[in-house]
Each structure stands twice: as C-alpha cells, then as structure tokens.
Image (cartoon, rainbow, N blue to C red; front, side):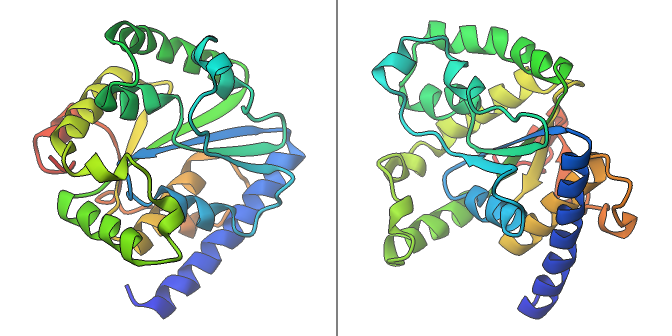
Length: 252
C-alpha cells in the first residue's frame, strides 16, 4: 500500500473513530481494548493511530511497568482494575493482565502456581467485567520471526526509538519458541465466546492499523458509522481457532 493511499484511508477511519467516541460519550458506554503480541509487533503504532484524534479526557492508554512491591503482594488483577474504563471512556491496554501468560511465564517472573491461578481465574474476571457493562475486545498482533528481528534491529539503530529498548528485547529472538508455546497455550485456554481473541497478522504495519480500526468499527455499536468502513480483511484480522496454530495462519 502506497503512502498516499494509506493516509487517505487512515483519515477516513479516524473520522469514524471520532463518530464512535461521540456515541460512547452520549450513551455512557465503557470500552476496553487489549493489545497483546510479541516485542515489536506494532502495538504502539496501532494504538497511536486509534487515539490520535480522540479526546484525551475520555481516552486513556495504559502501559503498566514493573509492579511495585505492594502490587506484587496484592491480588494480581488489582492494579489493572484501577485503570478500567468508567462510563463514556475508552481505555486501551498496551499489554495487560496477559503479561502473566506471556512475558512472565517465559522469563520466569512468576511461579507455576501463580501462572495456573491466573489461567484458572482470568475468564471469570473478564466475564465479570462484561457483566458490569464493559465492552471488551482482545487483539493479538502476530508477526514472523524475520519481521521481529528486522524491527528490533531498527530500534537499536534509530535514535528516536531507543526508548523502546528493554532487557526483554535482548532475548526475544533467542526465546522465540518459548514465546510461541506460551502464546499458543494462552490462546487455547483463554479464547471463549464472551471475550474471544482476535488474531491480527501484523507484518505490514499500515495494513495492520487500518484493519484493526475496521474490525473495531464493525463490532462496536455506533448508528452513525459508515458501514463501508466496517469490513476488515479476513486474512488480516480473524477470530482465533486452534486450527490456526497448525495451518500457517499464525506464525510458528
């Protein structure tokens, strides 16, 4: 996709997002969007394009850092619950409670017991959120190993992106297979009809951003939306199914 066409389509979709926000505010809706994926999968860029022209008063992006000693001694979901959307708000999590099923699992930052407790309770937690009126959307941005290597190298070479570099980056490729195994287990055990996972094939950043917005517009109720912009490419964004782990739809 050339730059001119991308910018034109992005502007159209961002106008639709502004319409959506007006609807959220007018009807006291609560929207929660979770973005997960490997390091350099494009979560930051996708979130930026969603929020770029939205009101900062009703839009919040949460990217929580390392938990404090007190947070580590608290109920696992407690620090995330503090940032859930109130009426009229859209909140986007750049990584979420699923850290426990991904980075923490792979890097040994949690015990096996803590991991299993998380897996046993996360769907109950999410279903309570939905029952309270929160509309929850979960996206997993999936990239290939070669694409991740290229993006991580770009981070190291680009002085405007050095803030993204973390110790986790250094072992991302080394632990590729471990992250794949953790991802597969997370998707299999936490995909469900109430809070399903949507996979995004994210090797092409421009295509990723446009199709995530289209998918969001297709699923959030908004009478004023232009239906022309509610048709994501099913080859780019699709609901998870276990068959995707073996048929090439998800990177091995």
